[in-house]
Image (cartoon, rainbow, N blue to C red; front, side, top):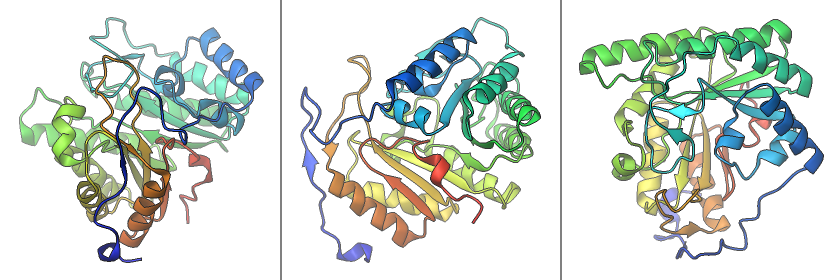
Length: 310
């Protein structure tokens, strides 16, 4: 269906104290959830599933998927939407973390693993080596585990624009040389809301990172995601999808933003499930290979089902 033939305005539901009836997280098996949580705690690991209280974590654990958070649980940036704790990391890098993650992957029998990290602007390489070390540790134990990476922008705010861009590409190349099955970097929201929502990141830098990834490693597909409900309108979402396609981003996730606490940026509206379906249709018309779109969709939701090699 062509974009021009669609309705001019999607349905907007004013935010309320109670969530809309269509937002009901899938808990999965309680035993599976408890097993993963116990192993994570025992091995002093972090997952974005737990740190961000993802509504799908029980379902993903049961499906043999988990998203590990490396570099600690303290982020050097203060994005207004994210539940991960912010501050200046005082602990040195834990070089045994990669091995503990690899052992957890083996023990849980995970088939698909997503590796993400907090922003580590305090490190010279912004955490790029943490990704490569973790990937190598997992593959040393089991070469058959599919590994996706979800990275920060690797951008140094303390350098000149030109030097920062060069360093960003060097860090990106280091990660891509580890041959993940997919490279993911989230744009998170539309261009107008970037400064308010993503403190320390910019729309242009993120698009540049995705563009560079396609150039440096054309065999590795790229992926990005948006949260809806932060105050964007339909036209802005469509323009963002077009911008992602302009840098040849191939996979897309769209989900409803849910406010983690009263200290986070409030929800401006809840998009109806039918609207998520329409956005998915628009994205497919624009040429995205695979789109996961729905109120509870998150960056890694059903990632194991995506055929990144086709």
